[in-house]
Length: 64
Image 1: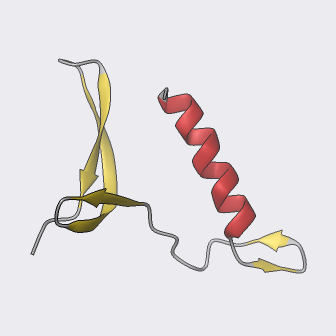
Image 2: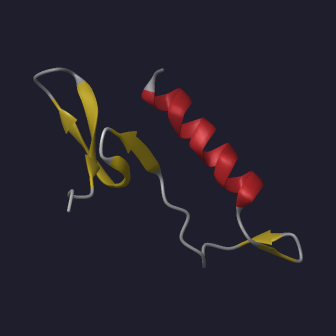
């Protein structure tokens, strides 16, 4: 999946599931992006571009 396709999919999912007040979307509630790993789900905290592999890397929360 290309990063652009993922962006639109995430945006669509957010719009379909966000809180609405009188039809107006608000960004008051946190909707996390979670990644399943061998040790349970991890939240995506950010992203960065890796020039060496020409790809966007997701930054996940640390394991406890």
